[in-house]
Image (cartoon, rainbow, N blue to C red; front, side):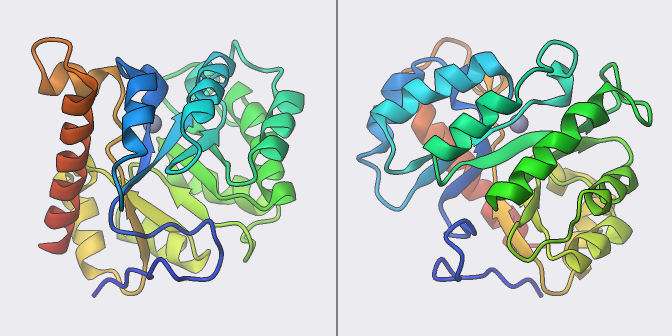
Length: 255
Ligand SMILES: [Zn+2]
């Protein structure tokens, strides 16, 4: 039903190895630097940490000084930060040049925040990020809460699909129609536990033909609040992250 490309898939950015957390926010977890250091000793497991504001970009750079082995960066401006982080292109370029393995994102549209309207501020900061991903040939991590169709329009306006730039739909929550469109542009879906709780998304994934899938915890400060009633230690957090990722994979396999 679902084809999971092997880690040997050509193109070093298409990480489909089983134990990769394709999306979390390490900079927003307690003991982040300790976790980054500890992670190095865990074989067969890696993380892509998404930094969503310029402030988080600097925090993530510090973590990459500790671990550049199995911790990978994604730099973007989240639609929530559209109003305060408009001046970012030069810095994003610098980061993409410094970190050849960095992804662009998460970026996108979110109806819960200001500037969501057509032609609004969110689109204004999204387009340059899409163009930079295309220019540097980096995977593009899309965050969308709202109308998926607008993303496809914007992508095509920016010259997508591009065979060299995978588009990853983070925390996928679309239905069968959206999934078909993702397949048409050879995009990837990043599956979070919440993706599997939504009936239309479950059904779409169940019936999907060939599709590239990765898994994520999207862990941030809320992950800690959900799973612990105190501040956990770095190893405890790492263990919970791995467990959550494994459960998501298992649940997906049961579809
Ligand atoms: Zn996220």
